[in-house]
Length: 237
Image (cartoon, rainbow, N blue to C red; front, side, top):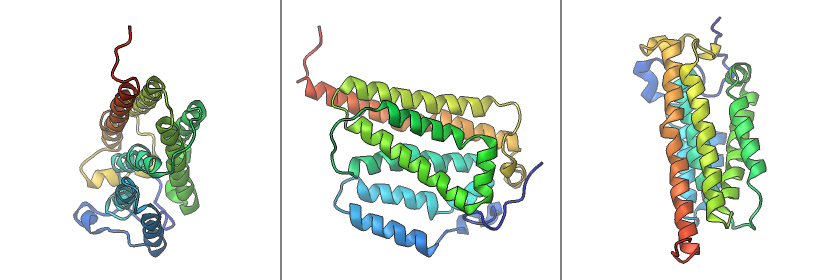
């Protein structure tokens, strides 16, 4: 049965389509946190861009729309783990190379776990759980991307980025081909947008399956370029 989005949900109840673009979130603690982060990262090339992506996710109408539409929630999550996270990782101070396996496993497990119906629906009903979801998704993704960026061997960075691409695509495919709607939290709101809950879920899966893989492909290209430069452009016999 569809559940009612409780008042404790961050960004409130899902807006009607005609009011969606007016549904900005000017939550003072959120704005203060973003401004402080901008101050800290203002001298880093990717820092202000990362803060801008976070503002898009949490301040723009996307935040409210994602309460109602699963496809919008997928865009929100993709912005966190595949756009803001690598930008934040690039803005952090350089670190010594470390293994990527653990960050990859943790970030992948968290991404999949938060898309389990029970955990997902709970996050949209309870504000504390909602912020735990956001913090763990973003934090683990930054850890993963930072580990990839600190890897000296270009081939390793390429392979781990490819692994990230594959797991994102697999989750997207699973959501796209699921025969029934999985999330009670999105059992009613998509109808106002002319979508069935299943069509909304399929659209979200497609977004995660195709567009969400582009940042990973960009990292693969960047890592391959770094590896080529590190080798002096020499071909390998």
